[in-house]
Image 1 (cartoon, rainbow, N blue to C red):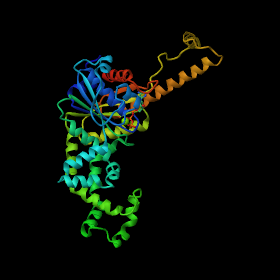
Image 2 (tube, rainbow, N blue to C red):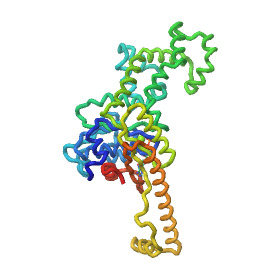
Image 3 (tube, rainbow, N blue to C red):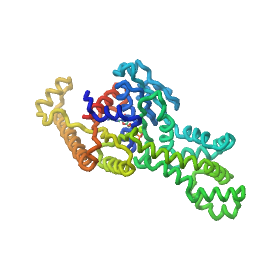
Image 4 (cartoon, rainbow, N blue to C red):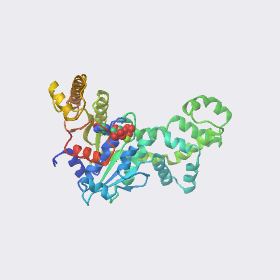
Length: 383
Ligand SMILES: Nc1ncnc2c1ncn2[C@@H]1O[C@H](COP(=O)(O)OP(=O)(O)OP(=O)(O)O)[C@@H](O)[C@H]1O
Ligand SMILES: [Mg+2]
C-alpha cells in the first residue's frame, strides 16, 4: 500500500472529510469507503451519511439504521482487515430531527420551542425550505466535530441536483427566512394578530403561487405565526450560517470532489472546485468514480477470443466470437472517451488537487468486501 498516497495523507491530517458532487455520482459510496479506509488505518471514524443503499447498510450490519450513532460490529470490520484500534460508527442524517434540535436550542423559552414544533406548517417548512437539507448536514457536522470519541468524521452530502447547492445552502436558508415575502407575513400578522381580508385579497395570488402545495382553512395565519416564531430564532440561524462557513474554511476540513467521467459531471465538478477555491475552502482530491477501464488485452485476435470462450466453458455459436469482438471494441472506445474527458479535468483543474480514479465495477457496491476494495483503491491513489 503506497503510504504517500493522497487519501492516506488526508486521513491522517484532517479531522473532517466531506464528499460533495452532483446527484448519483457516488458520494455516499465514496464517503463509506473513505471512512472504512481510515478505520483500516486504525482510526476511530464517524461516517455521517444520507440514505445509503439498503444492501450495503445490511452488509455492514446496519439493518435498522436510525439517526442514532451505530457502531459497525468489530467482527465485520476485522474480516476486511480493520485493526483493533480502528472503529467505524455510522449515523444517518435526519433533516427534520436536526432542525428540531436547533429550534429547541435557539428558542428563547421552552414554551416557544414547543409552540413552533407544534405548528402544523412547521413540518412542511422544516423539510421544504430551500437549502434546509444541506444546511442541516452542516449543522450535524458542527455538533459532532469536536466529539473526542472520533479521530475522523466523514460527511456525506445530500443528493442535490447541483453540487453548488450545498455550498450556498447556509446563505439560501438565511435569505429564505429573511425574504420580503416572509417579512411581509410577519409584519402583517404581528400588527393585527390576524390577517385582514383586505391584505389577504391583495396578496393572495402571490402567496398561493409561492405556497401552492399548502392548502386548507387558516393556513395563512398558521404560516404567519410560524414565520414570526422562526424569526425569533433568526439571529441564531444567521450566526450559525457564519459559523458553518468558517468551519468549512478551516485546515481541519477537506472536500473530496466526486464526479463521474461524463463531460457534464466533469464540467460541474470543475466549477464547484473553482467556487471552493474562491471561498478558500480546502480541496483534498477529485474522485472520478465509475471510470471505464480499457480491456486487459488491447486487440484480441479471433483465436484469442475463441480460446477464452472455451476456457470459460461457453458453448460457441457461430456469431459469438464476433459479438464478443464488438463488445470488446465498445469497451475500448468507452475507456478512450473517459480518458479524454479525464484529460480535460487534469488540464483545467488545479494541479495541486490530485485526481483519484475509481473503476466502474460490474455490480453496484453492495457489500463490505466491495466497499473494502473501493477503500483500498482510493488509498493507493486510484487505478
Ligand atoms: N464504481 C462503481 N461501480 C459500480 N457501481 C457503483 C460505483 N460507485 C457507486 N456505485 C453504485 O451507484 C449507485 C449510486 O451511488 P451513491 O449512492 O454512492 O451515489 P450518490 O452520489 O450518493 O447518490 P445521491 O446523489 O443520490 O446521494 C449505488 O448503487 C452504488 O453502489
Ligand atoms: Mg448519496
